[in-house]
Image (cartoon, rainbow, N blue to C red):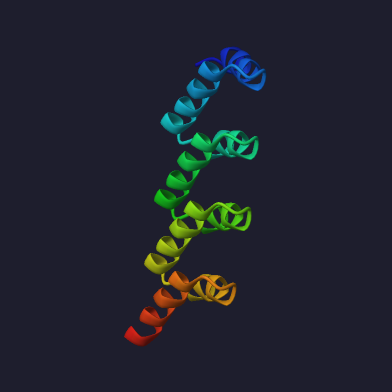
Length: 115
């Protein structure tokens, strides 16, 4: 897709055209374009947010998952716990646990008792 075509597609999506928005999300997923998904998610597109959580999880992008989790995205929080557990990121799990997340607390307990 050419840049001018992408620009027009973005303009159509920004104007509220749902087909253009769906196409933008699909293209961003195909290209693995986290920046575009983030832009769309931050504008309130739940489909883009879900795709961004999935992409960040696949990439092990703790920072992106933390950003989305801090913004109230429960799916991002769940994915963050999963990725942090896989990476052995005890500080991340501790932070979530200290904030009252029981799943993070359980994962933290399992990891610290396995050692």
